[in-house]
Image (cartoon, rainbow, N blue to C red; front, side):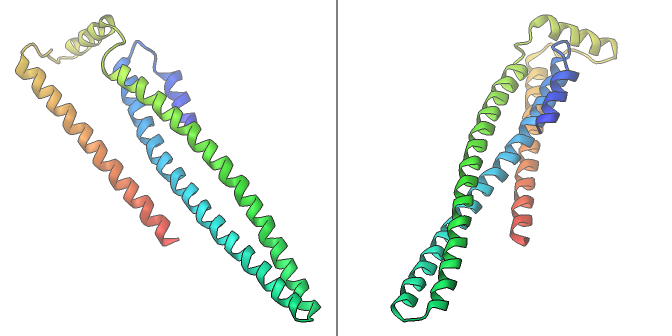
Amino acid sequence: MKARLDRLFREHTSADPRAYAAGLREALLEAKVGLTAMREGVLATERELTTERRQLADAERRGRLAGAVPDPETVAVAERFAARHRERMLVLERKLVVQRDELALVEREVQEMSAQYRSAASGTAGSASVDAAWRDLESAGATRPTSDDERDAAAADQRRREETVEAQLAYLKGKLRDQKRER
């Protein structure tokens, strides 16, 4: 995702605001899907950590019970298992901290990308670039909408496209969830 965004910034300059906005929107959608996957990863790690804590408590309890009965071999086995669970728990705790930090970083990046997209989509690139784009379109045979009806139709078309993209995003999220369940 990061490489794609870097490529977008390299390839599309402010002279081509529509292509820039379209590329930014695509990168934003990918980032949101990635963000969902990261959140699911954090939840999975939290579940693993809970399980590991429970197993550590069980191993320690078994060690205490074995200590009450004079059985040094069982005590040694329980201590080995407790050490393994303790070590795994520490690794999972560090992993969770890193995942949460990474999630916060990506959430900030997505917010920045959203602001950039809103800015690019609203046409703050300047009327000169918009006029230049219309000149290019008109030279290619397109006609500039002049009436409110034409603008309304263009806005409705844009809304339909955005709804289609949102539907595709929802589909991809569902597909990703299904793949996670199958594992």
